[in-house]
Image (cartoon, rainbow, N blue to C red; front, top):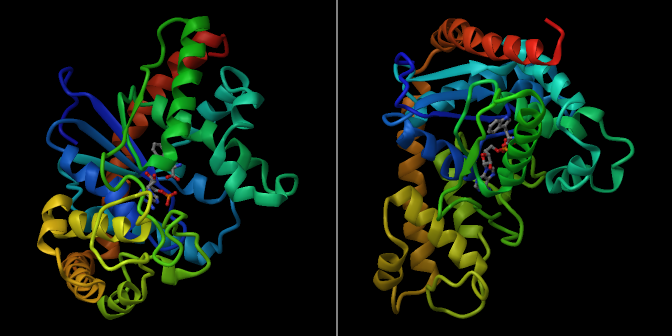
Length: 333
Ligand code: AMP
Ligand code: TRP
């Protein structure tokens, strides 16, 4: 990372190395990060301690940590400009999370978290405590770096708001220790929906991967998934979230991956059928994936390991400084 300058704001974001990253993750989160690199001090984490809130296979987890780092790089995160690091390598994250568990985070807040309710479903009593406490670790991630902006997809907004509340409460009691962060959510593409069930979000933990286009899907598999995606009744290509949610989602994917404006697409497809639209969309997705994967395949495991090791030192210094400040404020250092 370029030396932190006072005029540049810090942004922080992360993705869990679990499951297969998909175009929802790319459009909602990573593509935003790429465009923010010039203007901000950027820190992007591979949040492996978040991933273990649900059981992971050790070998797969190890692989996913490398894979996700390569995905950041292939998507255009430049290690000369931004810091990419592995969360678990910096112990300040879990230490601060514990402190925030005791100072600032409240049971009533966590009980409101919709992601926990969705993920735990009917098993709220038997899932791990970690899954419940997940947003507090996320608050620690954000608050350690004086983060001002947190670029994420729509589903993470509530967690960023909790981080704000925790920071405000802590500051109220112990002085101006934390910067109050703010979520940055893109206007279009903040919630890419599933291909077969457009009422739910495209999710990398979906048991039916036909709902998702993974960034590492073969282009031909992705083409088939697009051709099989559900459409709405009617024949016109229209953007109408209420009445044509499936088509609106496909238009959003087309616009984001094909670098087009939705109104322009609607105009271009006037009088044409769903079949032609989907075929063209499949071409756009195939082109995007082919280019992305060409870059991905050029990055070696060794290169990734080197970047993670180098960056560990940079973030550790920043994180430890903030942790020491916090410990001093509460009287344990
Ligand atoms: P996750 O897959 O939950 O680890 O999410 C990683 C990042 O991708 C977060 O910023 C999410 O908000 C974002 N994200 C996940 N799924 C989607 C989606 N379907 N549409 C847009 N953004 C998403
Ligand atoms: N909870 C986020 C997700 O699932 C990942 C995450 C962990 C994160 N820590 C973060 C995102 C800090 C932004 C900032 O998508």
